[in-house]
Length: 72
Image 1: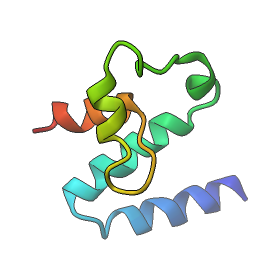
Image 2: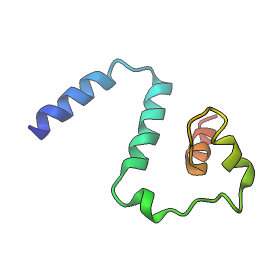
Image 3: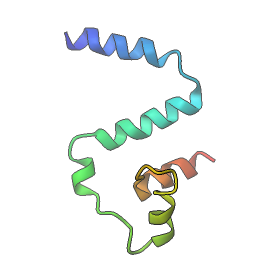
Protein backbone atom coordinates (compact mmCIF):
# COMPACT_ATOMS: atom_id res chain seq x y z
CA UNK A 1 0.00 0.00 0.00
CA UNK A 2 2.90 2.38 0.67
CA UNK A 3 4.05 2.06 -2.96
CA UNK A 4 0.57 2.91 -4.19
CA UNK A 5 0.43 5.99 -1.97
CA UNK A 6 3.84 7.16 -3.19
CA UNK A 7 2.71 6.73 -6.79
CA UNK A 8 -0.40 8.83 -6.12
CA UNK A 9 1.68 11.56 -4.53
CA UNK A 10 4.17 11.60 -7.41
CA UNK A 11 1.39 11.78 -10.01
CA UNK A 12 -0.20 14.75 -8.24
CA UNK A 13 3.17 16.49 -7.86
CA UNK A 14 3.76 16.27 -11.61
CA UNK A 15 0.90 18.75 -12.13
CA UNK A 16 2.42 21.51 -9.95
CA UNK A 17 4.59 24.36 -11.26
CA UNK A 18 8.19 24.62 -10.03
CA UNK A 19 7.58 27.36 -7.41
CA UNK A 20 4.87 25.24 -5.79
CA UNK A 21 7.15 22.19 -5.84
CA UNK A 22 9.84 24.17 -3.99
CA UNK A 23 7.30 25.16 -1.35
CA UNK A 24 6.11 21.57 -1.03
CA UNK A 25 9.69 20.40 -0.60
CA UNK A 26 10.22 22.96 2.16
CA UNK A 27 7.17 21.63 3.98
CA UNK A 28 8.24 18.03 3.53
CA UNK A 29 11.66 18.89 4.95
CA UNK A 30 9.98 20.31 8.05
CA UNK A 31 7.90 17.15 8.45
CA UNK A 32 11.00 14.97 8.49
CA UNK A 33 10.99 12.94 11.72
CA UNK A 34 12.96 14.60 14.49
CA UNK A 35 13.83 17.68 12.45
CA UNK A 36 11.25 20.01 14.00
CA UNK A 37 12.04 18.77 17.51
CA UNK A 38 15.80 19.25 17.30
CA UNK A 39 15.93 22.69 15.70
CA UNK A 40 15.72 25.58 18.12
CA UNK A 41 13.97 28.70 16.87
CA UNK A 42 16.17 31.69 16.06
CA UNK A 43 13.56 34.11 17.39
CA UNK A 44 15.83 35.79 19.95
CA UNK A 45 18.77 36.15 17.58
CA UNK A 46 16.64 37.09 14.54
CA UNK A 47 13.59 39.04 15.75
CA UNK A 48 12.75 40.45 12.32
CA UNK A 49 12.39 36.94 10.87
CA UNK A 50 10.17 35.94 13.78
CA UNK A 51 7.82 38.85 13.08
CA UNK A 52 7.89 38.37 9.31
CA UNK A 53 6.82 34.79 9.80
CA UNK A 54 3.48 35.88 11.22
CA UNK A 55 2.55 38.57 8.68
CA UNK A 56 0.62 36.15 6.48
CA UNK A 57 -1.60 35.17 9.38
CA UNK A 58 -0.06 31.72 9.51
CA UNK A 59 3.00 31.09 11.68
CA UNK A 60 6.18 30.48 9.72
CA UNK A 61 9.44 29.37 11.27
CA UNK A 62 12.53 31.49 10.59
CA UNK A 63 14.09 28.43 8.94
CA UNK A 64 11.27 28.38 6.39
CA UNK A 65 11.87 32.05 5.57
CA UNK A 66 15.59 31.37 5.12
CA UNK A 67 14.79 28.54 2.69
CA UNK A 68 12.44 30.74 0.69
CA UNK A 69 14.98 33.56 0.51
CA UNK A 70 17.68 31.19 -0.77
CA UNK A 71 15.59 30.60 -3.90
CA UNK A 72 15.27 34.33 -4.69
